[in-house]
Image (cartoon, rainbow, N blue to C red; front, side):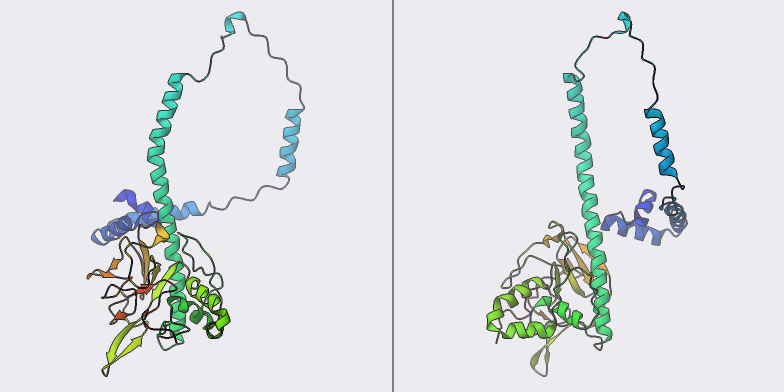
Length: 333
């Protein structure tokens, strides 16, 4: 475990190894001293990160020194004696080529997978950091909306998962440089349309194609909660999640493959199908190698009926990509 402490401090471990180190630190308090020692060493190394400024006139002095040596006259080398002359031969022999090829194959088979794994982990970490920025925006929205998070509505024009973006934009809590593109896939800034602009677009028949295209692209590479329904006085009511709905409920994630009628199998394409980052209401972001979370193994991309639609109760959380609707069977008015 000692060899993983440096990787733990540098955030260079995969999620499973990272969790193992954290459990080890809890079970072995004495290891915390070793961790602090490594952290202090890394802090000392960080102090040398910035190069010292060159001394004044260094460039001129260097060029002068080069000119001095280039312009001097060197004595001619003596001719070699007959005994010193070695017959020419081809530098590369068959045995040399065979050894070089074997080395390339051996090193390549070890290095390429390691490099690919490192690159995957870097993109997962970058995606986690981006989702944490979205969580900060969601909290800013809830602070001014009585604890509510942006809610995907039952009816147009905000009856699609990507509607959380214009709702955050209108509340002025959305950073201009935040990305709706997962770093593991591609990055781009959100479409900055207000709720009123989207409503006007939806109401205009001539702009229907533009409106439908916006619905598909507004949420980018992420999925957002479609909300849930519960019976109130014998009538089903539509609700969205709140900041006090439960820290372990998922609210955003990498987007899954999309099919509104039935929920297709498979992980998000953002990380090569290897899993998805999931953001929970409490602010935690975890990389899950399957679509299920929690002790009960809840599929975050489908409800209890196996459909990507509104959940049946608050615990039946469903996340959908931008164009997903909470009520896919409901005709748009």
